[in-house]
Length: 311
Ligand code: SF4
Image (tube, rainbow, N blue to C red; front, side):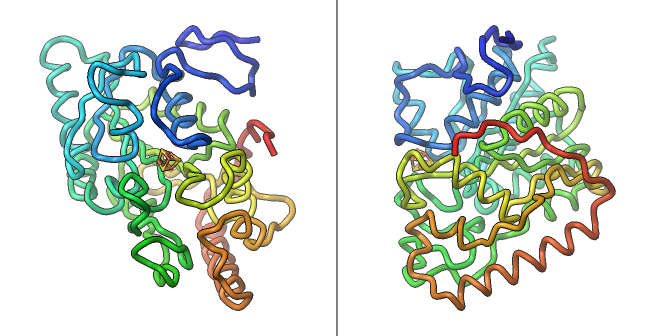
């Protein structure tokens, strides 16, 4: 049994619900994003303020005076999470409260697409903020329209025959800003996520953490498949766990010992149920190609803690 910074009891790898994010929120059952935010707040603690652009969490956190979060949160427009976080941090510093952690918590739309200009500006200036992207791979808040994070082949309401483009390389874009720390994380590897948030706390400047947050509603799968889908995304190498320091030094945190075919991952989800065998093989080919390039580019392979086995 351990007690973490926020005073939460739990086993090392056990599921931990943060006292900073209480039950009674309005997420769909099995929402991966809520698990991710629980863990992030457990690490960052109470002196944290969230800049929240339009996204599922605009609904999940409820309407005033209902509030499942025990930290302060400011709602903002879709495109302004990083700009708001920048202003909040500057305000805290000017009023002698520079120890307050400011984090943006944005979905993929507020990161890859509509929020990218503000994120790019903050990253270029190396603002001392966290920017978390909980990525459910579409505009789920408004009923599953495609975003720049939607993967090839995925059904959405705006790609009724399947997405025709590859997911945007957000880590490549972020790395090009040379911020001190960028990482990917998964809700199936929670200790790895914890470690990355803790590492970010030690670093002054912009920290970007991209969390693949499985979404049973939009991914069209049962709500008890959230962790399994997230784990298979990593095992199949569709979503590698990695870190990038100063835009250059790259660390791969997980190299699967056995190859898992993308079919196992895609087959869990109704959004890919229309794909032919040939289309699945094409996705596998692209995953293999990206993995090969990634492995060739990393400076180090350091194992991630394997996290919770919910499968
Ligand atoms: S639509 Fe998906 S991301 Fe949004 S609250 Fe529901 S499960 Fe979570």
